[in-house]
Image (cartoon, rainbow, N blue to C red; front, side, top):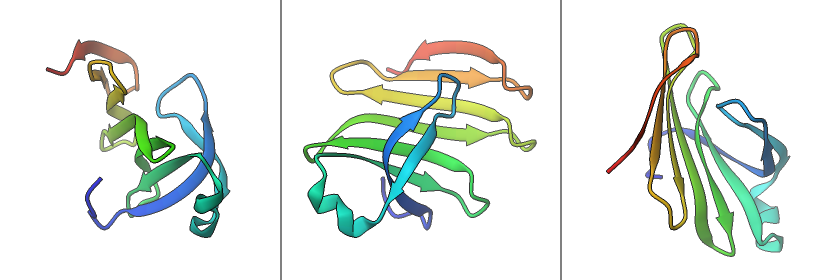
Length: 104
């Protein structure tokens, strides 16, 4: 992800079945050299998770990007998994799914 002025933090893993996923067990950037797998999370100025990359042995294996409605509910999730087609999920203002489509 290009430098967009967003806050980048590092984590051991993520949890949850509902989007956006929650990043868990924060780690300091200095600890990355001792890890084969880590999560790089991006946050906007308000502290909302705007996306993350799962990095395994230096390669990005999974990417999530999130956008939100004005009320804070998830509006859109773009998910890219290594060797699979990207998927875009859209949500209404209540956070309910409204459409799923492949991003081509």
